[in-house]
Length: 143
Image (tube, rainbow, N blue to C red):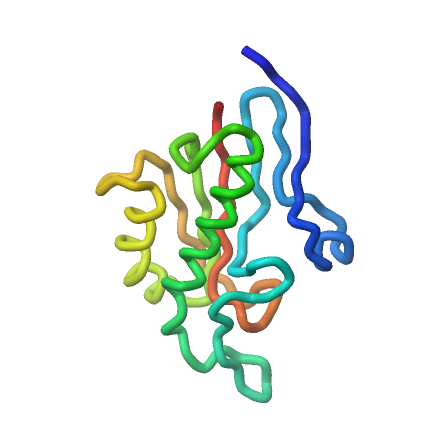
């Protein structure tokens, strides 16, 4: 089996500002940083926030989740892999109830099957990297 150590990024400003890469392959394992809802440097379906920087509406959760999975699929493709190779995901969210309501449909679409064969952990948190984000998903894949 071919093994390689390699990293991939999207070239978005926050990678350099924070100092990280989006994905690293070590041997037969691909580790993806938490994926958020962005297309290039633009946020996708940003949540509305109030003057205090707090989210006022969680209805864009499914759209943000779809973009997280799309970004993960793109990174995995660069390694010759796909979401079929994902063995673990960790979902970080401001609102676990909103994720739970959206995740059945979104996850089944993303993985292309009614019973995604991936372990999944859901964690409620207070804040993500940008105030308009509702969800971030971290992935581990084996190839």
